[in-house]
Image (cartoon, rainbow, N blue to C red):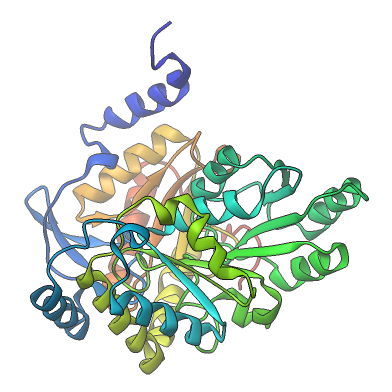
Length: 408
């Protein structure tokens, strides 16, 4: 038996992808010009697949904060906070994030993936039940592999399915820990969070919400789905990332739990990895200030979402169920999705291709992510390019509106 025999299905999909002549999972950006453009394959390319929701990777104040931090404190910490100690800026960032959410406690992680991995596998232990949405992110599934809790899946975005599983658990001992997401990263749909919270309250379950794709985008103050649904105080733990709206890298968890700090000596992904370097901490602190000071970025993001989503819908594309910063474009099968992605790149537009087995329900997608600093002209151009390619591939046989679900 070969080492990679167990991945035969994935290897087949990967071979299909590479038949285009490009490997979408190893694209090289020769130079990033701005939040919305880069040089790829020697040509200027529009970026609509980078999760750079507010365009803060090139915000002058964030870049200057990072540069000054390097000059003052060097390029890295060279160890974990448990071993090497915390910098003043680590503590300040945690305080600022906690204040942003109106919570008492915050922990900062080196990546958002590590935040989910460590927190979930630590909170749900032996004798507990960990309940997750079927379409959960890979970091949540990987946390399931690390925990000794019983793992139970419920149907995607279906509170009644969660309730049925909690009811079935009956009076069994152990904590119930439910993990939800604000905006799901493939189809761009959001959880019916208030309904989920009602179910969790009824059965005494703890709630973890991952706001990776909803930080900044949702809520009157950009605090995510928990804020927009009015349930900030009902979510026991909120997890997020700095690598999307805040334009850097890292992760965090906030909570009001009085024993929260015990996590600092129990969560292995916090204890045994190097802490964020000063430059990243400084840029994130500044990015958080920008998010709070410039609500017009959120307004512009949603205007751009409408331009792309409604433009594609009007042409007849089959889209995800909601308006949102993630726009999933459904395609008939894997090979069409791969060829479509290649044609888009040849036309100077970079999006993500997502194919089975890495997608919900085996769908094949082009995954687009909208940025607040995209221009309307850029997004309208993208709609026209996609329409032309779709007709070449026979994807748009007519101009009938075919949208899955309703608008958000």
